[in-house]
Length: 160
Image 1 (cartoon, one colour):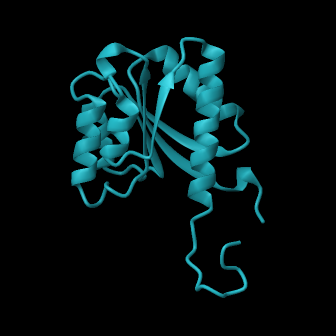
Image 2 (cartoon, helix red, strand yellow):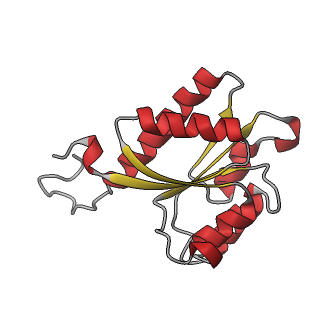
Image 3 (cartoon, one colour):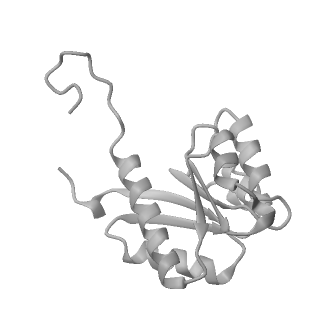
């Protein structure tokens, strides 16, 4: 078995709010897991990073992506739609997160229908937001570092 810090999970955060970026970074640093974190501040940069365009030609591919819905240039919905249309990006797990706002509607249902792995509402309280981000990061780290293995029915480890 390995320790949490032995595995590195690569995360792309697409977020334009500096306070939320700092909360996210602080939560990642405090987590028992280890993350490489890249931050982009709009949907256009997110797509350029994911498609390795311009200054991101030599970057790593993230293990999961966190998209804010309300971003400049290209919103999170459009980024998600373009990701799911691209065979190289469609398999990446994506978590959508945004403030609870009437214009977002029932965004978590929409996110799941579009192929998103999760939807999170940013609480207004920074302490709760940090806790939520830590939980999200640790869940995705665990899912990334423990890939499901398919076992034959009746094998000794089936269903374990």
